[in-house]
Image (tube, rainbow, N blue to C red):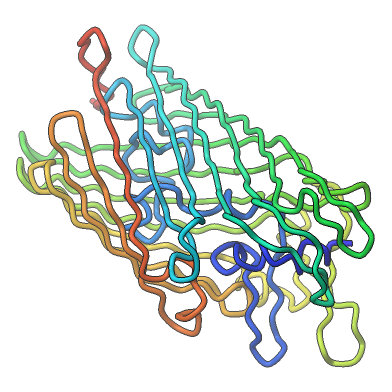
Length: 396
């Protein structure tokens, strides 16, 4: 029954820029299919401008999405951020992704932090169709998730964090496909992250910092749209590294690298005709996670193709003006997302404004729903309402 989801028109639009995008390359595609792929879309303009790099970059009010563990290493004690992302703007004006997030540090030495975020995906007004292209109802589908996170710093170098997430998806609610009445689905999930930072002070104004991060995200229950169908969440393993160079008082440069892999079963081919016909294996969530490292039909070579790579850079001038660029690559067999990104940032006292722009490249140029799209983030970070200065986490 998973074909009901795979062939729903609304998911087809989402899939173009998420974990289950489909590309026909001589019949040799085998992309992962999951529910709620909007959870894997970069929600903030800063990281979006750096090629979707964010696991180990310096923490800000959007760290909840990338690696909850690094929240406690934020330079300020509290912050809030809002991001607006148009979706398929070349086709429709009423689809968008909005993201609201924030954090607050506490404890004797500000060695703990709580964080929260709300993500809302509005897909406008859509008509549904079944696998045969027949009308299957209409509606105004949407999806949202709400997170609560906690992170703790164990030393000047190491922290860990846990985030709990509630997800609700009404993309198929009210539709009737192949005689199956669909409803809004809901699920719960968790993120678990670790973060390591090691600064090296070279002089009074010069410092280099190495950041490393790892996070398992969206690990939770399956999404159920009807009484017969349960779909995997986009559970993911992410590894990241960032190197920050404070060249002097005026110039700071960061380069970051993220590597991601979905922790869900690889689709299997049930056809013996030479034309692939894939289905999603029925496994438990935990079994799917462990099997995802060795279940690709093409063996180790295909497993390597399942890794997504993000590379990004950021330059700050006097911590007031930022320029960003990045590149994202996904194998053509596994989704075919390839794009360059660019971004700008402006900071004035506690207020920061970030913008990003995506330019698709390669064979995915004409299909990316974020093609030639601006994303905007407004962020406010401060010590706290009482004016207490942020606690230092400088390594000695």
